[in-house]
Each structure stands twice: as C-alpha cells, then as structure tokens.
Image (tube, rainbow, N blue to C red):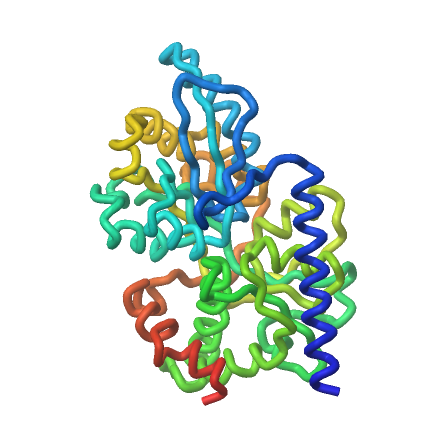
Length: 358
C-alpha cells in the first residue's frame, strides 16, 4: 500500500508539471532555457536598454503590474526606452543561478540569505542593506491556509500535528519561502516551550517541527508550486505567505486564513547585482528600479497583492487589512540568519535531522 501511494503521488506530481508546462506554452510567455539558466520572460517591444530581473516566484504578479509603470517613468525621466527580461524561480534556485553566472541586473528574492549567496560569489559588492528599509521591498507573515469553511477546525500550529491532517509546504533546499515556513514552525515550538518553562527549549522545538513534518504530503520546489498543488486539491492545510492567500482570495478563490499566535515576520529584499550592471551598463536604471520598488507608489501596489509595506506611510494606511499576531517574532528571535543557517540548515542541522528521523 505504501509503494502504491508513493507511485500515485509521483504520477500526480508529474501530471501537475505537465499541466504547468502546457499552460506556460499556451500563454506564450516563457522562453526556453539558455545553458541551464532560468527561463526569461521578455517584453515583446525592443528598448534602448534591457534590464534583466531575477526574481522569486511569489512576487511575479505584482511585478507584472509594476514593470510597465517604471518603464513609463524611466522614459519620461531619461527619454530612454526600457525593456525587461524576467526570470521567476524558487528563491534558492534563483540565487544559485545568479551566483553561477545568470546575468540578472537586479535580484528580487525571498530572504537575506539568498542575496548573501550572490554577494559571497562576488557578484554583489556594495552594502545592499545600506539602502532604504535595509534593502527590503516587502514584508509578510507565515500563515495557514485551509479549505473554505475550515472543515477540520484548524486554529494553530498544534493542529498540524494531529493524525490525519495533511499539510503542504515547499522544500527549503530550493525555496526561500519554505525556509520562512520552517523557521516559523521551529520558532513557534520555541515560543510554546518558553510559555511552559520560561526558557526556549530547542529539543522541544525540534520535536514540534518533526511532528508537523510527519504530516506533510509533499515538498514542492517553490511556494508558488506548493500553492498550485493545494489548488489542485492536495492537502488539507498549506503553510505559506499571508500575501499568497490574500491575493488568491481577492481573485475569488475560496480559502480560510488561520493566523497562528506564534509566527514569523517575513522580510523580502532586492539588490542591484554590481558585476552584471557594470558589464551591461545598466547601473543607473537598476538602482532607480530598486528605489522605485521601495517608493510609496510601488508599495501601494504590493499591498494590493497582499504584501505588508516597508514604507511607513503605506504601512500605516493599510494596517487594518492585516491580522496582528500576539506573539509575532522575527529572524533575530532565532538568533539571526547566520545562526539559523548553521543550526537549522547545515548538513547536520535540525532540519536535516528531522528529514533523517533522528
């Protein structure tokens, strides 16, 4: 029976991949890959200057609205026509591609660690966190999505450990969003242990993460792929970005959002890729584009797609749209990204111990 279930699941995942490829081909938006690099989506019009954007999948819909706005602003400011080439991949995959030579002028990724991979490879040489909002362009939180009406009565993380509850989140090896998900669950375990004993208990948090992971149906490549699987009917609960669910609900898809009391603040950065913009001669446009993404105009668009603004004025204007978890924490609660990478995601880290059932 176990073998049959595995085969059935693999066939289902293969079917999803075929459907996704068919949809992409039908839309005529995705170009073929180039020497193993992520596919680029290009505007049909040719410009005087081309800016290559390497982004994570979740931000795609908002960018498709924002790029034409920036193109027009740039034309009015400089008289120069601007063309975009866009690549959307899971954040970790995109970071490795850029660090490996994919010539993106601007990297828009799910987390600081993925920008740091590009910097460590020598492609980003400036202090990208010295720009406005510490280099961030959006925020969100990790939440739980259920089927309409919340038929299983999910109220928080502990319900995800119950027998028979089928959970979805993507693979943290490829997806930055998945790392936020894992960080949220592990951090919730620390919060729960702290409430009971007065101190953080890493062993309790590890067991808690292991109990949730035991109910996971599949580990998809990206947050967007995980969302697509959920929409095809896989799983009972999805662990995902709040903005993903808000955007889908706005489009008429019927889901319930459960906001755990203990969850993590997601922070998404963007950075100019120095070595590439100097090679392409696109530095001015790339720097202006990142600044535009942090502007009030762009922040309001991001808010329409469910993101929490990094701009203080827009954040204040839109605050009532979002739940405020009573025990919201950020990455520093877990010790910061350097500590998280070592403790959770190193070869002997907590996440890999969970996978190995240690």
